[in-house]
Image 1 (cartoon, rainbow, N blue to C red):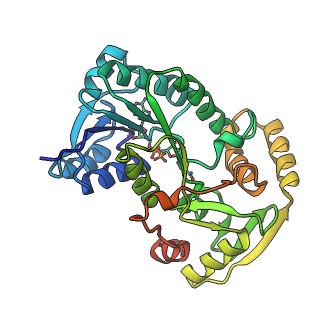
Image 2: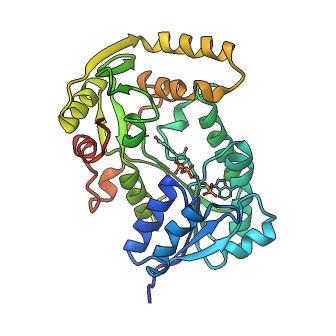
Length: 302
Ligand SMILES: NC(=O)c1ccc[n+]([C@@H]2O[C@H](COP(=O)([O-])OP(=O)(O)OC[C@H]3O[C@@H](n4cnc5c(N)ncnc54)[C@H](OP(=O)(O)O)[C@@H]3O)[C@@H](O)[C@H]2O)c1
């Protein structure tokens, strides 16, 4: 029997949440996954295999009534939220989950932040980060100890969602100063650090981790080395030019998701959301994966 206190993970069927569950189970920590009743069978099945490793599954939605949600939290002492969604989920849902956690007697709450340094940003810099800052304000009023884990950008996102690399054209396009440091971490390492934070009774406040801190030039070099491909580095404009491009696109669409990838890039390349310091040394047992190794292992090249 494990002597570790139980951890509830909301968002366990997601990209990051699933990794957090595994990282905790690997260390013998009892975990309960909160899974929405409507979650697809394929995603649910991904958790079935983990049940033999001691995973419990509780059905629930973080917007459920607090009484019901508190039952799902049960005897978990730490709640990790790795949910994704709109303000109904990120702001109201997480505040609701925190109320349920408090009611159930949990002590700690790790919100679904997992970004660059959102404490340094202002409203309007990135609308999805605004929701997380609003959630932080709501959670500050709870009786729980809130510990925020920040990881910069996922390696996965840098070679995918951001749209920087065009493998067919053989280009890597970027905005801003090519020497501006960028904080980057793989999903797996973010999960490992989150599990370490959850198991560290002294962890408090906001903790910042990065697998690598590299400039865009360094990123370009690592992607080429890892992929074995030669990519032309294209400079699209300054960080101010990018800000103007975001405003131009915002005027053309009512859907902010059309330009959110650019908002994420601006927060990074402007240096505004860059970490001032890292907490990696707090958990020396974690050796983050080098970016080039990650790129080599990822099947990104056509
Ligand atoms: N730093 C970065 O580069 C980066 C990149 C990507 C994500 N992130 C952050 O990492 C966190 C997790 O993102 P992700 O990509 O892992 O998300 P994801 O794969 O989309 O998974 C989201 C999870 O949230 C669950 N969920 C959504 N609404 C819920 C609700 N009302 N009640 C309960 N569960 C709910 C989903 O359940 P279903 O399976 O039922 O849908 C799913 O398990 C987010 O904070 C995100 O912003 C950071």
